[in-house]
Length: 357
Ligand SMILES: [Zn+2]
Ligand SMILES: [Zn+2]
View 1 (cartoon, helix red, strand yellow):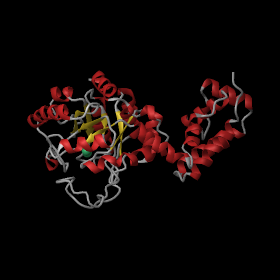
View 2 (cartoon, rainbow, N blue to C red; view 1 turned 120 degrees about the horizontal axis):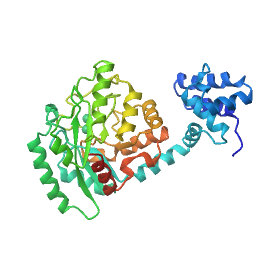
View 3 (cartoon, rainbow, N blue to C red; view 1 turned 120 degrees about the vertical axis):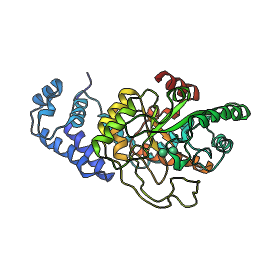
View 4 (cartoon, rainbow, N blue to C red; view 1 turned 90 degrees about the horizontal axis):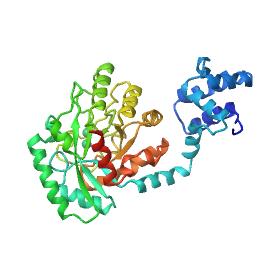
């Protein structure tokens, strides 16, 4: 067995790194109080409690800190610490760059069939130029009338059209079919089941009732996440951190020019646990005005064991290059490339989605 590390020193080191990264006080405090609670304990008791899982019975010690202690005592650098060290300082830029380079496609994009500004062909050509191997076309669903959501009939026509466009695109690149389907008030999805089953990738997002109370929003999201058709949970909190970037004018692109919006309220731990259980990916939405989910929630999704999709939600060809923003946020949170589904090839991605439903 590897030689034990000093668990108290590891907890303090984590607190220090969180402080230096200007993280929320409550996160830092969790590690400082655990270090304090455990510092007075005899080594034998510490080892025994780590062994039988009773560290959390001590005041100030939670699940995350107890796991760190157990890892230290087993002679491993705690995963939490390793992640912080890996994402520190100057390495971060390199990590974001590496993550961006590992992305082979984009799973959330719009065309002028709904509220995007450009034809499918132009979006595809821009994606080819960016070096993507695929682009998932995810226009809106019927109920989102302000965004010209596609009826079942129009979506069927779009599928035929995509097949034609694909035939004319360069070898090694293809448009995958998809939808950004509205998660309705009762948690059901706003499109026919047979169509959802036919599509390569289904992104599901909440676009209405964003101020609903916590239990209602949680129920709604849990039901959607458990739906086997849903592959990716889109812009999880619905927040808007800034007005729309200058020069972006998709017809009907959310209707208004400048506004911010608070995060919707839901039990994030329950939703991420469900995403992990049902293997539904959590989107890291790269749009500068969304930056959704916020970093603290990306970290919680990571801890919960979720997969991610780093998407642009592009409504115009130039916006397809916004993945860099999502990669920076993912790197800040220590999201490894092997948890990101759009590092997969188109074949792997489609095999995964079709396996699910
Ligand atoms: Zn959306
Ligand atoms: Zn969208």
